[in-house]
Structures are given as structure tokens and as C-alpha cells.
Length: 319
Image: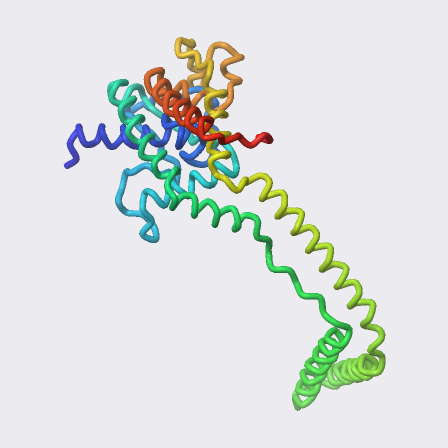
């Protein structure tokens, strides 16, 4: 049987990684946006009275050692960080019935795990993963090869020959009725004429070859434009995106009103103030985390930003 202490710490660890870390979740790395119909405010307690945080699928929370494909926590975290650097902040859905543990414990957990994540993102291994990720994102699909006129003609001849062989085979059926034989014979004659015509007029495929070449050029130009856009959006130095995302988090959690009044409607808690209810998901994630947790998270983000600025790193201007 799992002890109460172990259960509490497991929930604490999951909630910390899934909700409060700005460098994972408030910076967007905790999971995909929620697709549930949950109200944008704070979820109401469940009837059972048991705390039930929901860690998003694939979140890098260390809850179980069993991971598909043998993936490690660092692998999972790296994938989420790369995704967030490319796409921007994402916040998971989260339900809770109140404090899962003392606020001071939560803040300490944030500081510890935030430091771990920063070391990982600043490692040479992460930089190499980012470069590979950047190239993968910029790589387009394999383009179709334009075919020459003779190749198109040979393909058409081959198709006619296959059809003709099938018709001849069908006409060998002794059980075929007279109307069927007449129809198949007429079709065979038509295919034979089309085959002879195809062989006699190779010039008819010149226009098809020209159109294929033009389409291939158009697709190549489109792919080059996409590559240029991706490489511009994902700068060579991943620290620029780290700085950009951290600054986004600070901007979006700068005015969290922890003393806001909540009201319950249709089994859900909402902010009594419509302006607060209209706040974004990152702001609400900060509210759910609580003042000590968010303060610790913002301190981590601020310190990291300051170090990046001192190192001469500039954010990506287009956010």
C-alpha cells in the first residue's frame, strides 16, 4: 500500500512540473493546450474531496519510471523544451482541490527542478539537439522528380499494354456470354488503337513534361521560402528563444491577483471580475500555482534572463 506521505509527494512532484515551473510550464514546456471544455477559470473541487492534478500526456513530470520506447525524463523534457521554443507558451489543464503541500515546500521544489532544467538547457548536448531540431523543422518533404517526355510516353504505353493483356486474358474465358464478349472485344480494339496512337505521337507528351517541370519548380520555390521562414523563426543560437520565452512568461504573469474573488457557477470556479476571467491561460496557471510558487518561478526566470542579457544574448524580435 502506498503511504499517504508518498502519495502527497508524488502529487507534489507532478503538480510542480505540470503547473508551477515557469521554465517548463509557464514557459510552455508542461504540455499541450487543454482541449477540454473546462472553464478558463479555476476548476472546482471534486466531490470526493481528493486532490487530483492532471499531468498532461507526455509532460516531463517524473511520476513513473515506465516510459514508452525507453525515453528518459531528460529526453522528454528536451522534446518539450524544443517544441515550446518553436511554438511559444503552452499551458496544460490542471485540477486541484486546494494546497497539495505547504507552499514553502512547493517553492523549494520549483527552485530545485528549475535549476536542473536550466543546467540541461545550457548543456552542449541540448545545443546539439536544438541544431538537429532546427534543421529537421526546416527540411521539406521530398519533391517529385519531373519526368521527361519519353518517360511519360513509356509510362502511358506500359499502362495500355497492361490493360490490353488483361482484356485478352478475360476473352479466353469460355463461360463469357455473347454480349460480354462483344463488349470486351470492342474495348480491346479501342485499347489497341490507343496504344498504337501513343507510340506514333511522342510529341503529345512534350506539353505534359513541360507542365510537370513547371510544377516541380513551383514546389521547390515554395519549399525554399518555407525553409527560410523556419530558419528565421528559429535562430541559430537557441539561447535567443530561451530568452524570448522567459520574457513572455514574466510579461504574462506580472500582475497576477492572488486575492481575486472566485465564484462557483455550473460546478466550476470562475473569477468574479470579468476582466480577470478574460485573462490568458499562462496568467491563470500562475494564479493556480499560488503566490510563493509563482514568486519562486519568476525569480528563476528573472535570474536566467539577467544572465542571458549579460552574455549579450538578444531576444527574437518577432514573438
